[in-house]
Image (tube, rainbow, N blue to C red; front, side, top):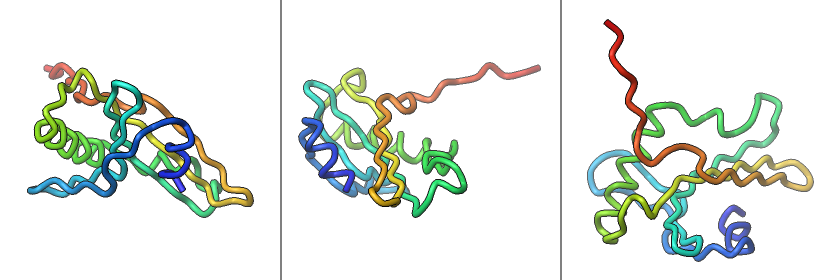
Length: 116
């Protein structure tokens, strides 16, 4: 559903379910949005009773996604300045609700200063 939605938005899908060689990171969808390579995390829920599907993305999941994205960028020869992370939330109501969040989180983790 997310794949079809993104294609209708004009993105060119180049990979689905990309697994990094070592580690547990998986990129649900990789697509070009014009000159930008987009890594898309797809979250689906039967209902929105317990909040938005994006709430399922924690710090550990972001870390895994960043590692997988770095590997994909390295193998594809694409500079990280030319990439972003998007999120597609799907709630399987009737009709299904699809929300596309561009630049959902940064490609490079923000470092917080150490508190003395």
